[in-house]
Structure formats: C-alpha cells, structure tokens
Image (cartoon, rainbow over all chains, first blue to last red; front, side, top):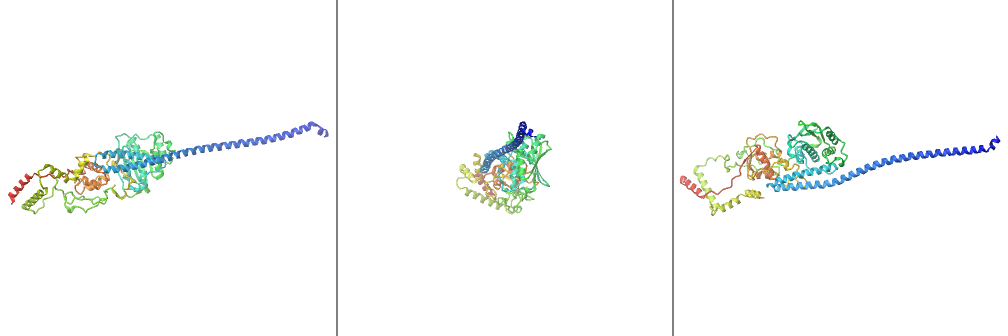
Amino acid sequence: MTEYTANPLLWVLLVALVAAAVLVSRQRRAARALRQQVEGLRDRYTQLENNYGKSVQAAQERAEDETKTVLKSAMRTLQGLAAEQQLVLSRLQSKYGESALLEDLLEIDHTNSQFGRRAQSVAVLCDGWLGGRRDTASVYDVVRSAQGRIRHFRRVDILSRVDFGITSRAVEPVALALAELLDNATSYSSPDTVVEINIRTVPKGICVVVDDAGVGMSDEERARADKLLATERASGVAALGNPPQFGFAVIGLLCERFGFEVSVDSSSPYGGVRAVVLLPHDMLTAMPEKKAPAPADRPTARPVPDAGPEAVPAASRTDDGLPRRRRKRPMAIVPGSASAPRPAGRSDSEQARVMGAFQRGTRSGRGTEPENAENAENADRTSSTPGASSEGHEVS
Amino acid sequence: MTGRDGWTPESAALVRPYVITKGRNLPDEDALSLLTLVTASAEDTRRPARLSPEEQSLLDLCSAGYLSVAEIAGHTHFPLGVVRILLASLMEGGHLLTRPPVARARLADREILEEVLNGLRAKFG
C-alpha cells in the first residue's frame, strides 16, 4: 500500500484525473452557458424579427393614416368648394333662368356634381366627411340625385317608385353608393343602351334594382367585387390600382358604415349586371313633405278650363305659401278661344250704347294725336311691360 | 333663394335641375315665350304615372285654366328656363295645350271706328 502511495506516478495520475474532472465540468458548464446564450440569441432574434415586422406594419399603417389624413383634408377642401360652386350655380340659374345661358349653366352644374362625387368617394375611402343633409328625402329623389352625379345620366331611366323617404343621415351615403353603381353600369355598357332602375318594396325594406345591358362581369371581376363589397375591405387607398377603381371599395365601405346592403351577384335580363341595393327599414321614413310644389293635393276631378266661377275650387295655396291663382273668368279676349256666351238680356240698343261709351272712352284716354305712329308705338310698349322685359332678355 | 324654410345656403337642392329636365335643351322662344298661355289639355284626364313629380305639379298648376309661362314659373322655385323645358316636354306628350300670348292692343284706325259709329248711329239712334 505504501509503495503505491509512494509512487509518484499515482499522484500524477490522481492530479491528472482531478484536473480532467475539473476541466470536463468546466467545459460542460461552458457548453451549457453557450447553449443558453445561443438560445437567448435565438429568442432575441425572433423577437427582433417580430418587432421588425410589427414596426414595418406600424409604419405602413402610419403612412396609410398620414396619406388618409392628407387626402381627407384635401378632399374636404375640394368637397367644400364643389358645394360652394353648386350654390353659386343655383343662384346663377335662377338669376339667368330666362336666357339661353341657362343651358350652359346646367352643363357646368352637371360637371360640378360629378366632380363633387369624385371628391366624396375619395373622402369615403379616407374615412372622411361625406357632407350631410338635414332633411329626409324621398327614395325617388335620392335615386335622381345619384343619377345627376354621373356623366351619362340621360341614359338612366327610373321605371317605378315607392312612397317612402330616406332618413337624412342615410341620404348622402345611399346617393353616393347608387351613383357609383350607376357609373359602373353606364361605363360598362354601350352608349346607346339604357340603364333601368326599379324601386320595389320587399319584406326587408326597399330594393333599388339597377339593370344594365352591358357585357357583364367576368368571374374574376365578380370575385373582386364581392370581396370589396363584403366586410373584407380594400387595404387602403394605395391598393386601388392605377387608374384607381374606387367604385366597389367605396360602396363596400358605405355599406359597412351605414348598414345597407349591395349585391352585384346576379345578372340582368339584358345580359349585363344587376345590382341590388337593399335599404333596411331603419333607414326608411314616411314620404317627406314636399318643399317643391307638390302633387299631393291633386284634385280628382279637374274643373273644365272654361267653366264659370262656380266651378272654380276654393283658392288653394302653393307650398310656397303663395295663393294659387285660379282664373275667375274664361279669357275671351284671345282670338280663337271658346268665347264666353254673350250675357243675355241686353238689347241691341243697349249694346250699341255700351259700344259708343267704349269708343268715347278710348278716344279720351288716347289723348292727342292718335295717328302718330311713333307715339302709339311707345304707348304700346310701355303698356305691356312683360313683353318688353322678355325682349330685353332676348338681347342678353 | 326663395326664403323658404329648409332652403339654407349651406345645402343645395338634392336633385339638380338638369336631372329634372332630363338634360333637354331649351325650347324655341317662339314656341314657348314668357307670355304663352298654357293649360292642361281637356282630354288628358288620366295622369300618367311616368311623369316626374315636378311635371305633375306643373300639370296641377295648369289644370284650373290658362296661366302664362311667367306665372307658372313664379309659382315654382325653379329657374324660368327649367320650367319652360318641362312645359315643352309636357306639350310634346300632349298633356298641355298652349295659346299664343294675348296680342298687344293695337290702336284701331280712327276712321274705321268713326265709320262704324256713324253706321251704328244711323241705324239705332
């Protein structure tokens, strides 16, 4: 035993063994530390990657938001200007209503409405201001308003109507969505075809059906339209392509925000697209009271024009509050009219006396120089001012 | 514009006039001047449903007798030209009859009047 202990080799071996054990354990520890470090790094890496993705997305969203904000305020200016111009045009139209200028004013009005609609569409895509109406409007008027906002409004024919109104909140969105549908319908059908609109009551509310005689949509286009009309909205202003195709994106957003439905998944009997707008009950009201002269109190039996004063109905009022004028007597002065029967009970001599008095009266009233053609002409002109004013407008 | 309630400068009319006129052009000045007299045609008892509300209200205005174009325009809030276009289209549809404006009073020839008077005096008194 002692020789073993005395053997230096044993000690060397022992020392080596201990050193090896220490070394191994240290290596192990180092390896474990390394492994942990690698794992930590990997975690860090994925974390960074996630963060990167997130921040890219956030940056995109921020950029989108910034674009939207910029566009929104820009569109708001444009919308305001378009609305202002519309008012100016309305004023001009009533001011120059009697001149030939009116046709051009109406043309400008039309262009301005289209311009306003474009601005509104972009504003909708930017979650912006739509412009509001304070009054409810009849469904028919909302459809006509939509009709006025597209280029080829003459090709749109409204075939039926219903006696319902649309709440003031929904007037603009429905009009804008319909305008976009009509724009599509008229743009994708040949210029000599008519786009038909039918308004129907259905159990769920009111349907506005737009039928065009165009080429219809391919499956691909239909899928895209369905996607845009469904909840899955366009990923932003940037994704609309060039040239941008707003239509369905705008309609989809409006549907989502205001709660009506638009579907384009059926085809029209004329081969084109049938678009159906379903307005739910909570958007509908009773027919609004007409501000324009209304056909509401239409007399069932119209009096014959030349009937006597007894037949004249009680003086009604226009909706402007002005008394509606009724002729008390038939107009017999116009040549060729069905003249009033001569009042009986006047003898021939009486008649002649009346004639004489009339003649004396005109002579005294005419004063001097009745032969003077110029004077007569002047008197003539001053005596009939409406004619003179119409002449004045002809010149302008 | 007309000072009615609900007509505020902030909101223009929902339905623009060119939609109401369906984009038609102004009629001839000769065919429908300010002074032309208009009435609903007597045989037109059935009121077609296809007429726009504006056209129907114009027909209502005209139904009681002859009114001049200027008067009709005064009763509506539309520009005169718009009313003329609507009236012209109603005329085309046979819903309205027109008369030329009342002729301006012409000064009668004094000599003829005197002769008539003399004749009447000779006969009656």
